[in-house]
Amino acid sequence: MMGFDAERYSRQTRFAPLGPEGQGRLAAARVAVVGCGALGSVVAMALTRAGVGFLRLIDRDLPQLSNLPRQVLFDEADVRAGLPKAVAAAGALQRINAATTIEPAVEDLTATNAAALLHGVGVIVDGTDNFETRFLVNEVACRVGLPWVHGGAIGAEGRVLTIIPGRTACLRCLIPEPPAAGTLPTCDTAGIIGPAAFVVGAVEAAETIKLLAGHDATAGRLLVCDLWDATWRTVDLAPLAATGCPTCRRADYPWLDGRLGGRPIPLCGRDAVQVPSAGGGIDLALVADRLAAIGPVVANRWIVRADVEEGVQLAVFADGRAIVTGTREEARARAIVARYLGA
Image (cartoon, rainbow, N blue to C red; front, side, top):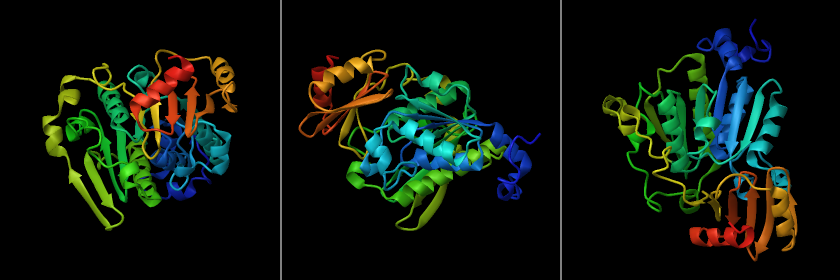
């Protein structure tokens, strides 16, 4: 039994390197996409259309108008509805391919839950916008020997690297220390054009399909592109793989162990800060009642959102974390959460 609709995927299976056998592998595959923003939405759409059997979408945020130029799974109605990105994306993807099982996870990937959220899949794909989450993914992947595809885009530039622990360089081999805050350009400082995200996401999806189909010859080579200058190059990271790093050679996991990370996180491309949960979930009904005394509240099973001060919006998620929109100051964001949630 093939396990897939032969007519639907007839053009893919005519591509000899994939063929019916590779398509069968896609139908049986399980993939986690971490982040449903610019890169993650392109990756998830491409993999769903390609016939991947299961996708877990992990995302902590909700759609904003500023996302729409590059985040292909969302529209203005999603922004108005206030649904979390993972839920809105899952609905859009299910309309594209009902045969793909889509599992939305409205959570922030942290040292506490990373192993559980990334369990039971064959490949992880990076759709994130911050180094803390990427290092967590890298450490889980190295610890359990799970392939993953790293991607990043800023301005008109992008990079993609397929990592196979134990065989290729890992993320820490490439970036031994996380960049200090403010030392690298972000979506806020350098901006980003949609085509850069589309290209990087498409390359990440292609790398994932190759891994799932058993073709991994390009793993370990960093692709770097600049769409504005029309330049493309690849960098062979075999020399880094030969020496390795403390994570992939000596099982050192500082992010998973909680020695690094855990601070409030300014969100890329938004005037907003995410404040981690003080511990465990939260009763959203009680939060909605409390915030209703201040003004109109938008609430659903995943999130409660309200304008709490002039120019400041507070969004509280079921896992206990909050996003404060209207500031990029970590101290102010924490103060607002404490003021209205008592946490």
